[in-house]
Structures are given as C-alpha cells and as structure tokens.
Length: 209
Image 1 (cartoon, rainbow, N blue to C red):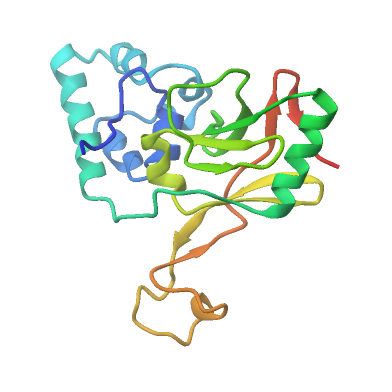
Image 2 (image 1 turned 180 degrees about the horizontal axis):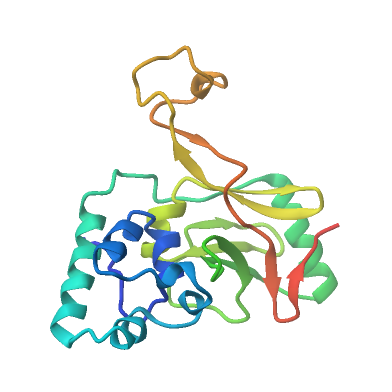
C-alpha cells in the first residue's frame, strides 16, 4: 500500500500538525511561514512562490517532506471512542434529529486537530463505527492517521476531546517508569495535554453537556 503524501495545496501549519518533523525541513529551505499568520491560510505552494521558488524547487521540497513519512515509526491505524463520548454524540443526534452521526478528525489550522461533523456520507470507510441507534462513525484520512493513530475520543468537562498517543519516555529501556503504570505496552502512551479536540459543526464549536 502506498504511503500517504503531503501535497503542496496544504498549508504549512497543517503539514506540521500531521508531520511535526516537517518543521526542520521547511526551515532548511528558508521557509518559516508556519510561524506567522500566513501559514494558516496560505498553501505551501503559495508560500514557496512568494519566496521565489521555481517549480523544480517546490517539487524537491515536497519529495523531502514525503521522505520523512517513509521513516516514521508505525502507529496503530485506529481510533477509539469511549462510551461517554458515544453517549454525548447520541444526545446531539437526538437534539438535531440526525439518523447517523459522522465525525472526521481534521487539522484545525492552528497546529492541532479538531472533530467536525460530516453532513453527508463519504466514500471513505470509517476507522471506527458503532452500530447502535443512531450509528456513530469516525473518519480519518490516511495522512492525518499518521499523527493521530491510536488516539482516543473522550468526553471530559462537557466537551469531546481528542487525546493523542505520544511516544513513551522510556523507549523500551525500563519498565519502572509511569508509561507502564496502567499496564500499557511500549513504546507509546496516551497524552491528554497536547491535542485540540472540540467538536465543531456549521455553527462553530459545540459543547456537550
């Protein structure tokens, strides 16, 4: 199966969200637009052209970014949704008289991720599905899955949160650290501090109470 690819139509901020290692590569090319507001709405190609890049240089940059993907460690290509989160989503479905809840994990344009409602069915297969009434499905693109694979969607403080799976501090060298406090296997653990995860719909952020 081919690797997902970074595209020049993506914004630098979203590229770094799904591929944090890209920051150093962009810096080597003299591109620091991810540090300014333009990096959130200007595509990588537009940023490159504003810096005088020729087509060949842009393609070389894209190739270097995608080379990073080939060297990434393998993460679970899955998402988990807690019972509390499913219950909150069904509450929303009841309020809005929806027959199917579809969520997609997408970059939020600020260096993190958010959960967005999909109004219509998509050709993509969900990465997580609950067959209750109404059914709940979660969609994640292969590129975004590189970063959020193994994450958990949970309900805390009245809001849905996306908890990213982060690298273990011990890197398999010791089983006395907190990574194994709950019996987790190396080399990863869940982080509840670095991901953005509010659910958004057409009217903006939605709090679940």
